[in-house]
Amino acid sequence: MRILVLGGTWFLGKELVVGALARGWDVTTFNRGRSGPDVVGVDAVHGDRTDPEDLQRLAGHGPWDAVVDTSSSELPPRDVLLATRALAGQAARWVHISTVSVYEGWPHHPLTEESPLLDCPADADETFGYTGKDGSPTKYGFQKAGGERAVSEALGDRAVFLRPGVILGPGEYVGRLPWWLTRAERGGRILAPSPSQRRIQPVDVRDVAAFALDQAADTNAGGAFNVAHPDGLTFAEFVTACLTVTSGAGRPVWTAPEDLTRHGVKQWTEFPLWRTHAGVWAVAPSRAVTAGLRCRPLTETIADTWTWIQADGRPIEHPRWAEHGIAPEKEAKILASLPGAG
Image (cartoon, rainbow, N blue to C red; front, top):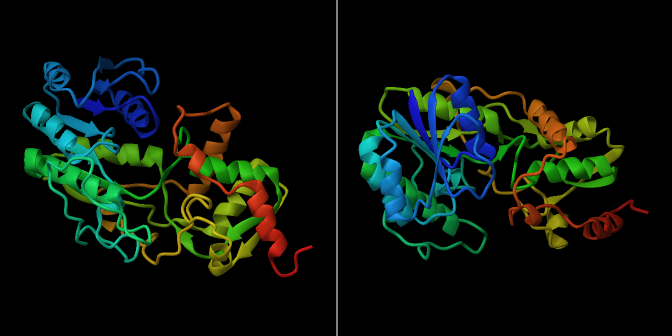
C-alpha cells in the first residue's frame, strides 16, 4: 500500500504517518517543512501545495493507492482544487479531512451525513462566505464546503470525506484540552458551564487517524462520514477526569449559561468545548461506526494528553492556542459575583 499524506508532521498528520508506517505501508509526505520534523521512514517531499510547479514535481513521486489530505484547513477552495487536479491521476482514492462546519444546520440542529451542506463553489477564493451574527454559519464552514466540492469534482466516487467536530489528544495545537488540564491542576473554585450532565463528543486524534487509514485502504465507493464519539461523556465527567489526572484540588462551580453570558464569557474559546447551541454535540456518527470507527474512552484521551504535557509536550506555535481559556482575573471576578460567594 502506497499513500501520500498532505501534511504529515504534526497532530493528525503525524498520527496518520506513524500509523501507516506501523502497518508496513510506503508513505510519502508533502509539506513546506515548517511545522516539525519529518517522521523517520517516509519519502519526504517539501514544497508549497499552492505552487503548480511544486505539485507537478510531487506528482512525479506517484502513483499512490490513496492520498490523505490533512493540510487544507486554512486554504480556499481554489487551492484545494489546484492540488486535486494535479494529483487526481496519481491517486486511486482521496481521503479529505473536512469538518462538521460544512453543514448548513451546524451547530443549531442534530446532524447526519444527509443533512444539507453550505453552498460554495469549488473555485472560490478566500473572500467567499460569511459568518452569521450568532457565530453560525461560519466563513470557515463555507470555505471547507467549497473544498469538499473541489475534491468531488476531481475525484468523484473515489473521494472520502471525514467530518470531525473537535479532535483532542496528545500533540493538540489548538489548546482546548490543555487549557482545561492546566486549569484543573491549578485547583481552587473552577468556573464551569452548566448543565453539568450535558454530553460532549470530541474524538481522539489517534482514533481519527486509524479510521482515516482504514478508509484509505477501503475499496468501496467513497462518501462522507461524521467522525464524532458515539458515547462521549458528560461535562461533569470531563472536568472530574481533568482533576483526577492532574491531582488538582479543585471544585467546579457549575454556573448557568445566562450568568456566563451576562459576564461576557465567549463560548467555544474562553470556555473550550462549551457552546449552548442544541446541535453542537448532536452529530450522529452511526455511518462511521458501521464502517469501523472505534473510539477509546475519552478519559484515556485526557490522561494521555496530560502525560504528553508533563513530558514537556508542546506543539508548534499556533495563534489558536492563545484564544482558548478564560483569564484568571475574569474567572475570579465572576466567581465572586455568584450567590453564596465570599
